[in-house]
Picture 1 (cartoon, rainbow, N blue to C red):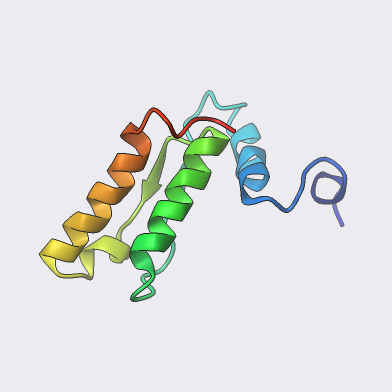
Picture 2 (cartoon, rainbow, N blue to C red):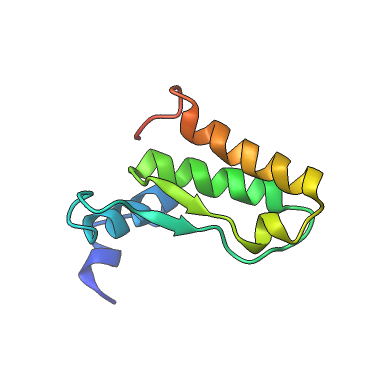
Length: 95
């Protein structure tokens, strides 16, 4: 196992995203994570959780794609607004 996974970081998702951020020229190139595949009823919670992890690690955004656009207009807008609220919320800070 690589040293970075066993010695230099934990299995906490925020730490793992920080490792991704370190590979983006230590944050000089913005990190935008994929929101993952559309999964059904847990999409909203999954997207918000991923956005919080990304923001707390220093990331700059989340790609939603199918998670938002394969839903009805109302549900898709709710999902996008929820993710926007994470990035606009000043109380969600870098961990």
